[in-house]
Length: 262
Ligand code: PGA
Image (tube, rainbow, N blue to C red; front, side, top):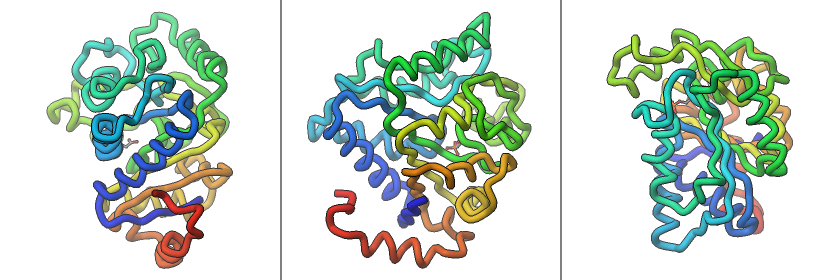
């Protein structure tokens, strides 16, 4: 895994946006896997800026989001449909028909999950999957003990995740759904490139376990050690518990020119 340590979440978000923008420029019909939560916000801000200021064109891009809460309709203000509209899709030119987010209102959840997997296959797979990491090491909503081979399915959120996410629901834990539909770890692993972001001291333990610990379903993000093209962008507080952080800094500072992120 390539570890990129940046001074602030803003700087990390800009690096992530440049990685994504480079893909969009070189492969205008690329398939992006997208994430929600606080972590990718700086990335979306920078991509929106690039769209407005530099003409970064998303008109041929296809997107698949990682997850959605079960029981929240798209128009619910705390649904991930609404989140994506507010922070990204409402400001760029991804065609509506190319946007995919699991349907949290599906009557037949297993059928919806199978449909989602089939749609990813029909789009020829995900080129780059953007990820956050939970304080418990989840990616998507693959909580600890998730099968490392799992595909899109229903999951039950841990109480820790519900508590972490209550801030999006005005701090009201009772409003946070118990279930979600999420891409599986296997779905994420099938993407051609993964880009995980983690910012803040509260992510430091999960990041250290994911990057330097054993591969274990107890920290689903650790499975990314098995991905051939995985990058992890962290700020200093999130990097604080990485024992090899000086080496990661040195690697990033000494990249050959052709590998540099413009
Ligand atoms: P956060 O969530 O970005 O809101 O911290 C990350 C995650 O749960 O994957």
